[in-house]
Length: 497
Image (tube, rainbow, N blue to C red; front, side, top):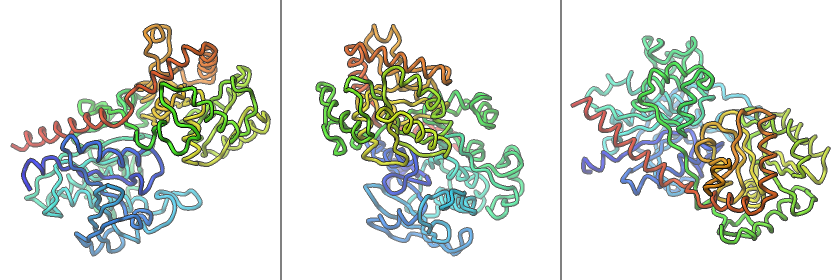
């Protein structure tokens, strides 16, 4: 293979990838980015754990390396293909051969050996980077979130094992800083880290081993999933204990907004909608609204505005604020259709709210992909009142489907939604409603603004059409990632020349 071709090789390292395994937006990103990068000349392979849901979906598999021992047992490294993705899969049943959620057991507790399970993912990535597979040598290793974040550290500390190998450039992407991977210092030897690494300029973090901290410490470049979130995580309020390190490394931190899979989310031919539509025939959405109201048992007149929610039920997502603001929402003559699961107190709170306002509030606890599409295609507005939101995909889907997003002014919500203030309305560029601060009062004011705009249907329709015309796919994000890869490879080459 030519030097130019090798220069384009990127090894993406992630604990989940759509459609093989998914618990959240991380999988959507790692699943969509390889195809989006291909037009930019970037050849991406994804290294993923061999969970049962991954192994069973492999269309082609070849063993390319055998590990006699990998954190407690033997393992095979497979070169594989599935769902159009080029993969490396770690087939290690003692680590990954468990049904259900990749991170927690059936009681919702973290798997007892998560440190070893995801250290293995990072270690194998580092070994590939150091030349484990002579026919596949990546120029960039792109680690996603804490589960892959030890890869840059292993590349640094284990370089002596392969002294002739050129270390690849590394990119560390933070999808949510709240999840950091913190484990006891007693595991240092178990995780094959040298004693000297347990230091402030190593993997040490609040007396233990910080996986994400290690990635932020040693990666050549750090990215996160929106420019505003990249700024927020460098503040004391938003840095969650890592802001000091991120400020020190500020020059290598950047934000790239996520994209949405526009083939999956397309109101023109969505099989989950009773009626498909485009921005030029938005009146067809009425049939979806009727179906949505019937599904949730909402019985008000068609002209009543219908707010939708598709979310994890948590304080991070601001759903406690919405629960408190429901009396205001109802007083505006609006209704609510909510799909989600999460904190038991919030689940019970919304169930009680639905019981107390029959025919006005409908709640489905859980997740249903088809129903999520119907909420986007049938609700008049979509609520995303998050206290922090690294990027968010729900508001992107809402804009694409003509459900006006009502969002807090944080993170990626701030970067993707143009507030319908007086100037934006006059200029004809508004795509949604933002509010700040993220409080009950702020949300109630936003609900009032939404109801007022709804009553002036012409302005509302313009906001819908603007949102549907907004590019929300992967074209621009992929171009930014390709540029980031080129820069970090050039910097690495310059540093070693």
